[in-house]
Amino acid sequence: MLHNFGSGPAKLHKSVYEQLAHALIDYEQTGLSILEVYHRTPLFEAILEEATQLCKELYQLDASKEVLFMPNGATWHFNLIAQNFINTKAAYIHSGNWSKKAYDIALEYGKAEIVASSENNHFKSIPVIEQDLSAYDYLHITSNNTDVGTQFHSYPNGSIPLIADMSSDIFSKPIDSNAFACIYAGAQKNIGIAGASLVIIDKDFLSKTHKHIPNYYQYNQWVNNKSIMNTPPIFAIYAMLVNMRWMKAMGGLEHMHAQAKEKAKLLYQTLDNSHLFEVYARKEDRSLMNVCFSMKETSLHNSFMHFAKEAGIIQIEGYRTVGGFRVSLYNAIELASVQHLCDVIAAFDHIPR
Image 1 (cartoon, rainbow, N blue to C red):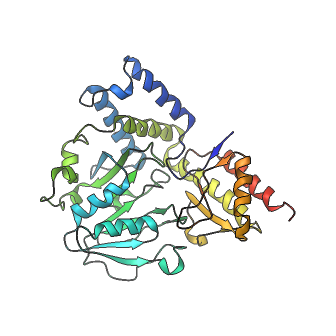
Image 2 (cartoon, rainbow, N blue to C red):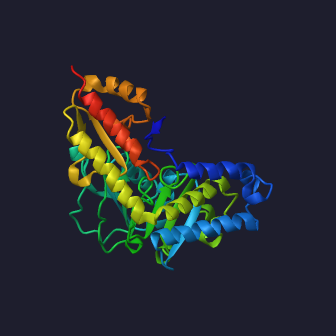
């Protein structure tokens, strides 16, 4: 049996795969594959409507929020956020590789500044803001940092709109949606499969969209066209819908969060009790989604990688700029798989050397 802890595209629950597989052959007993459903028919309109309503239900969104299902991944939104919303200057928190990419792209469209960074401690913690942000158009954060294994467990409060890239912890816990002007996420970690993205955006914030950028890049236009500016990634959106159905059936985001805490606690305790491994992130800021760690003796890295692979554990390589190991604990990862990994770590820890 394989235990896939990859950081994305990530594992979905087996029941989700089964429904997707069936839809590829015969979608809803129509005789059509989901791949040949035309996007301007009631069949797809029903998919889009149910997906929108499920997203609103899971996050308890009120009428002030719009939900968009868009093509591409989160990197595309690095561009769109800056294009749409930089008027004077934007504020960015630098907490790792992906936050820096978002900031660098923002500089291509206007003035942006890093207002807090944890670069000085190699991103082992979440940065703290120590300045007034009232002069900025918005504050951008990366809510979970897959490369270093840190996560915002509370969000910055302030007088300016808060925008979050939640690609790697979307739908992993309940949040106060009113705290955010915009949330966006690539689908391939906790929502569905690669090729689509989800955006939750405040209607009032939409009024600040620039009108001089091309229509295709305006969030307002995507709202006006109900997420259909061109042929959408139908199968990827359907995959999000099926996965949201599964999350609801399992007990919603309260259940997802409880499971995430249990899985992360088990793995972090195992690593903290080990004499060979060490966790990368500071305890207070450790991610529930991505556990990054390394060998205290780097010479043992390849030995453990081989040992884990022999036990059916795959895709635990650390991010290329960080090294070590990375274990992703997204919603579909079962507690039994985490326990198996912990047993493997403990067994390797006790090999006589």
